[in-house]
Every structure is written in structure tokens, then in C-alpha cells.
Image (cartoon, rainbow, N blue to C red):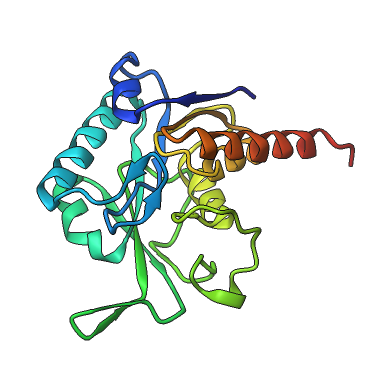
Length: 216
């Protein structure tokens, strides 16, 4: 399996890629809630964020053969329905009390996918603990404000892609999607704008590659 990690602006990199050059785009993008991602500041105006995400989705659709999957917080549900109207919505239940929004506790995240599942799956996932659930999130933690669950990412990768297919994540972060692809025998390209997070992702993915080479 091949892994390629690229330091750069994801939109610029994607615009340089040929049509239908990857099998799938799977990502957990920034949510525009003011988190500190180092090089990228998560504080665009609503209109600028919508345009930016729309441009990234358009490029993702252009370069992907089979479709895209974007995992976002519940507050972004309406926006991403506008941006990816053809997507199927899978609700991911967050068991801990979520962010308050108009006297509602937001206890769900959303997966918007235009890819056909490889097998029959439910569109309510309520059996995975997520970051932000305190003690109940038992996965290894990494110093990143947008950490994604590896168990969740594994389910997305296994549900929507096949072994040896090429997956792109334009928001590499700590390398969760890349780690999943190594574990699940998919080829991978990751793009990250922050050098520090890129180095962290490199180490994490190399560790996963070494573990996969260990004899049973």
C-alpha cells in the first residue's frame, strides 16, 4: 500500500490533481468555530466558510471516481445539505451532552456521503464513543483541536471503499484517515497545511505501517 503526505493548502493541491485521480475523498473538515489549528485560523465569515467548503466539495467531486464523504458537527447539518444535496445522511450519535444550541443539546454529528456502501449498513451509528465524551473515549489522544475517532474512521473507510483503492483526505490533521487506510489496506494521499501536524501524522502513520508488518 502506498502513502503520500503533502504539505500545502488543500484547495491549491486539489486543483493541481487530474480528474478522477482518486477513488474516494473522506475527510473531517474544520467546522469554523474558532479553534486554533496552528497555520489555519478557524474563523472565517459564514459566507467565506460556505464558499470555501463549496470549492473543496467541487474539487473533491471532480477528482474522485466514486464519491465523497464529509463528517461534520450537527450545527453544520443544514449547510452541508445545501452543499451536498445528493448525499445520504448518516447520523452519528454522541452520547455525552453536546453543545447547547437554542435550548437543544446537540448530541449528533453527521456523515454526508455520495458513495454507495460496499455492504448493507445502518444510517444511525450509535455504538462509537467520540472525542469530547471524556472517560468513555478510550482511544489514544493526540494534541489537535479537531481529533477524529479512529474507530469511526475505520467504519467509514470499510463501509465506502475497497481494499487497494486510493483515498484522499484534504484535511490530514493528526493522520487518522491515513492510519485507518494503512490498517484497512487502502492507498492514501493526505494534505495538511500545518508543518507540525504533518510531522505528527507522519509518525502516527509510520507506526501503523510498522505494526502491520509485525508477524502474527
